[in-house]
Length: 317
Length: 282
Image 1 (tube, chains in turn yellow, orange):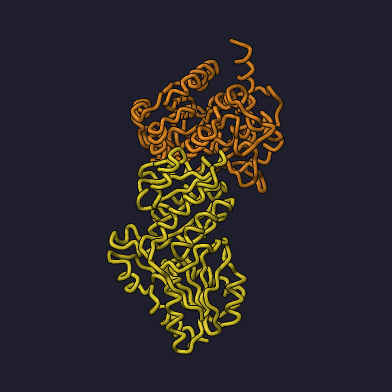
Image 2 (image 1 turned 30 degrees about the horizontal axis):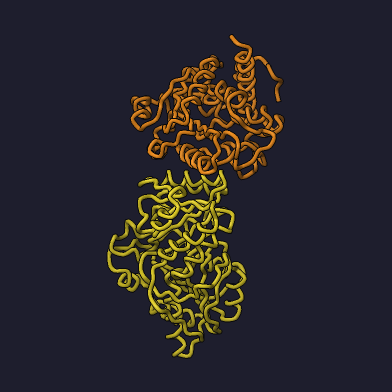
């Protein structure tokens, strides 16, 4: 079992800000839009360096999505920035008609996703976005696991032609992936190989899955830990290869139990390789105020919760 | 009346025939709005727009762009797209039928030349037009962006987000147009949800506002010329295009009834009697 370590905790949103700068410096077509959250999205540096390519739209997210669609017509690659709930639920019809159906090359960059938004509470804790976005035809859905990977993803999406939803978060979390690791859309990353259970995790839950894997290892359980950073298109081949070997699966995500990664994996298993599966996710309820770590624990989104689900699924093998 | 006006009026007459034939053949669709805007469509596509119908490119670099935000006027738009050469006019017969590129509301999915974004869910077109206008500015492309909206559509909040943005960012290569026919699906706009003083609203948002008699070709041309001349002054321009829904068909005018209803065979015959076949039916 490979042991993953990190030097410091960092937020994924600052990875986004750096990645946006990286790509903007090499690709003059990249433009940025923000709906009054430049600080939160770490877009201030981009705004300073490329004032002509940055558009502050104010608190008008629907308009931002339409403007982004229009910018693509002139060959631009717009990155829109706001919180995940304002990036999806608030503007679903704008994304659906003007971006997804129209196949516009817009990169919807959504920060503060999930319950780890924390103290602001459930109004701002978007837990349905993966579901909404993966239901849209033509949409690619990406949810990187840490700062370095978010930075790499922010660069990689400019090379891909088509609408992308890039999901990241607010809190500082272990930054454990290699900063030089290229981001390949649609290719899951096997972090640890195992034979007893497949753990498919995305976003902040990837580190928790690694921690769970360590605990399970002490009990003699060999978990295969896979980072599903691209939820759509899903790396079906890697999912099936793993479950073929382990015979059972646990998914882990900071999202509702309905519509997210767990749904995507279970659909693949039901169709191609039926196997026992358990889901670590928010159980069909809204969040609440609190510190991110407290909320993750309370809502069952921790390494401990993953271990529990693994023990349950092993019983069903 | 100048020769050009006479020619454009003939085109508008044929566009009206196309609209009726398309909606009648499909036995669905929206005849009222596009009949009212046929003169505007003809003037834009045959006279005003600098565009390349034979070489359609999605990016529209080096040409004027037109966005139809009130996508239900598709029959009228498709007619002028076909008749200016974006695609064969015979394809108009496929309108709203299975496997067509001429979807009920405009779409890019099937690759219909001339369409750059899907529309139909109202309120979105002006935002897209703002983005396209910004891209032209970034690309140093001096051409203009036009966007037609409905008056009922003015009830959508996103229109006013875009209105605030365009004025605030001094987008001056953009001409908005509002089909001010006073009717929407459920009745008169003033009954469904009064717009108040639309002229004053747009002016207070920072736009230069013009009025146009949208069913008078001379005024259509004159006002579009005026609008173009006002571009480049750090201010967007909007035209209140006063039209009559169902214009030219006696029994379709003065009511909202024909917003989204096709004529039956007998009504179709009566309606067609109003319009001479000027350019040849598709």
